[in-house]
Length: 437
Figure (cartoon, rainbow, N blue to C red):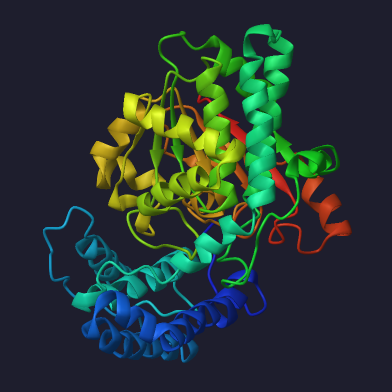
C-alpha cells in the first residue's frame, strides 16, 4: 500500500501549488494595498504612530510576499513583545520549525513543505507583522472585508432570521418528523453558508445576496456525503439534560449568521442544553471568525432591527444567561493536526471530550481533522480522523480544497466527469458524522 502523506505545493498545477503560487501572494497584495490606501484613516484612529506603523508593516509583508514567490526557506517567528500572552503561540510554531529540520535536515520551503503548514504559517507571519508594530498590535487587516460581507448579505440575513423565528414560535406544535425536517433544513443552510469564504476568493467579495432557503431543494443533490439521519438519531438519543454542543466556527459574515441561527433553533427546541462557540484568537484565513467579529455581528444585527435584531437579542440572552459561552484557544491558529491535540493541548482535548457533539465548520477544520493527507476519497471518515476521538464529530463544509473522505466507491469519479474542479469549487457539500461506535 502506498504511504499517504500530506498535500503540498510540490505538484505543479495542483490546487495546493496554485494556492501558494497565486492565492497567497494576492492576499498579501490586498493587505498591502489596503494599508497604503487607508493609512490616513488608520492614523486618525491609531495616531501618528499607527500611520507610520503602516509603512513598517508593509515592509514586513512585502518581504513575506517575496519569500513566497522566490520559494525562500521559512523563518523562525520572532519573539512577541508579550510572550506571556495567553494566545501567543510563537513557541509552538518554532518547535514545529525545528522538528521539520530535524526530520528533513533542511528548513521548510513554501513549495515543498506541507501545504497546510505553509498556508497557516503565512497568516502567523501576517499577525506577527502587525503585532511587532506596537500601535497596530491589535489591528485586523481583514476586518473591513468581513464587515462588508455581512452588510452586503443583509437581505439573506433578514430572510433567514425571519424564518427561524417563525420556526421557533411553532416548536410546541411540531411533530418529531417536522422537528427533524427543520433541523435538517437549518444544517443545510449552515453547510451552504460555508461557500462565503474570502480566503478561497483571495479576499474578493463572496456575499450571500439571495435567500438561501429557496435554493435548498436544488442544492440537496450536491451534498455528496449526508449523515443527517444518523445525526438526528444521535441528537434525540442524548439525555435531555446533557445535550452539550461545541461549535468550532469558520467564517464570519453570513456563514456565522447561519451557524448562530442553527444553534438558536437547537437551543429553543431543547436539542442543545448548552452551546460553546470556538472562534479564532486572531485574524485568520481572511474571513475566519474572531471573538471581536462575533460581538460586532450581534451588535450590527441589533442595529439593523427587524428579525435580525430580534434574533441578535436572543443571542445576547443566551450568552448572558450562560446557555451559550465563548471559548478561545491558540491551538486553532496553528497548523497542528487535530490528531495531535491530546498531546499538545490536553486541556482543550479534555474540554472537547465533555461535549455531546462537536461541530466543525469549513475546509480548514476539515483539513486539520484529516491531517490534510492525500487520502483516497473512499477512506472512511473515522479512519481519516485517526487518534482524534474526544466526542462525536460532525463536519459541515463545502469542498473548497484539501482532502475529501468518506465517499462511496465511484462517487468522486462520477462527479469529476461533470465538474473537474468539484473538490475545490465550493459547489459540493458534506454533512459527515463520526460517533466512534
